[in-house]
Length: 318
Length: 107
Image 1: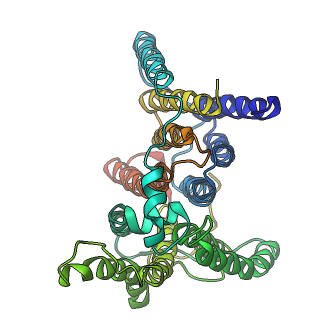
Image 2: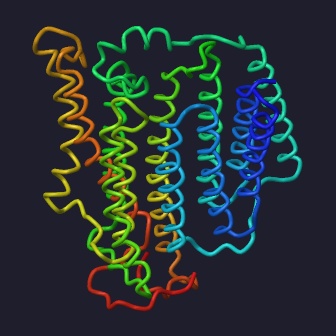
Image 3: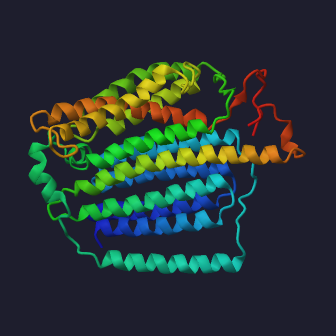
């Protein structure tokens, strides 16, 4: 590792906690959210430095992009807070700080005592990857070796979409966005075809390069949110049959593919080796649709709603 | 000090900062940001530990775990924001004489 590499890593590793601290102590809430978004983008850079491009893609799209958009859309309903107030008496905060400092030092010592080099599970993965149906190790782990985790994760996404939609009071609707100028719709018209292309490419390449269902779904979800913000489409509601069908098709197909070997007397998720690649690609394609729709459903539920029948009023400045 | 040690220590510090913010910040959106920071710290430690292979190719299993973790933490953030919004609406409804009652959106 050259000196320049080390310098870059040292700067990144020290800027990340600094940005996080600033995001939490800064006085205005919008500043905090913007600092958090910057923190997320720099952590995507840290993943890239650590040789984890899949994680970097998902973090940039979902962890930073979507979370930042969700937090910003919350400004529509939070009570404006001018100064950051903290709870707790000074001595309580001092005790908490001391405990956390001790915890940090202890955990740091544990990490420094770990073996410097170890293979972990990478040898097992590389030994069996030929029979997994894909050639990219992370995709093989996600969709085949640890497919059970991914199956449950998809169900968690589904439950989360239902949860956020259940908090919307009955009879309200989200008014269409009316962007104030022609710039956003024009930008959206230019960008959406490219987004669809990039997402399809990432989905296809997921079998032998970083990519896959989550990255592709996150990019299409982001595109969907852009379309809603520019007023081109209406926010999807769960009352529509198409939305329900698209939401369920990914998890249902994955569940069917996972459970089908049980009928043949084999174990859960034991794909037949000849068909593993094709099955994984089909599962990922349908998962992309469902993931994108879940991410789009998260977004309007976090923003302001209007009761049905009220006349549209000017948006108040928050 | 190798690369993975740097990022692992950074991840631990991030977790501690997030936990402190979770306890001391009063506003609910800041608490949600603090929880996300904690999650990022954990993921950083996991991916840093995956970097220790002698062959140079990182261990793919922690990468898959972190991928799952990021998606689940976004779901949790969305649920937390929806519930926080519901909480604020419930508080507004139980205090009819507050100045915020004049809003027409009922949110």
